Length: 117
Image 1: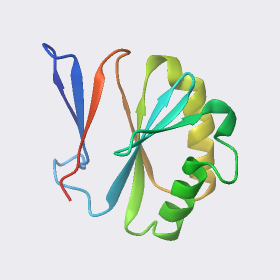
Image 2: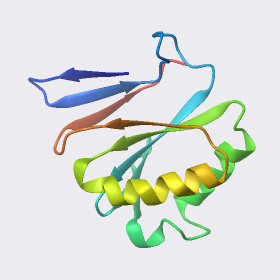
Image 3: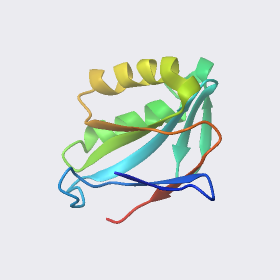
């Protein structure tokens, strides 16, 4: 579920299910852009060329979530220019049996992550 603030051109992503309830699992957040991904809340950037690298921060995060997939999952914020990156990342996530949610967001909007768990 996303809430937008049009005056500020900001989107806030809150992890909730379709009934508006907080998820039972802890979400981790990734933003897909044309040049790579950003891991939140640290805002750590992983270049497109490093996404598949065994030691990349993304792979480290995926291993952590995979090991705790009963309690954790991923939410991917998808920029319009990040569709190809999203396809690559989604394949990695799904190949590890990790639950995934995604939220399309406009280019140029500031992304705010709100954790409520």
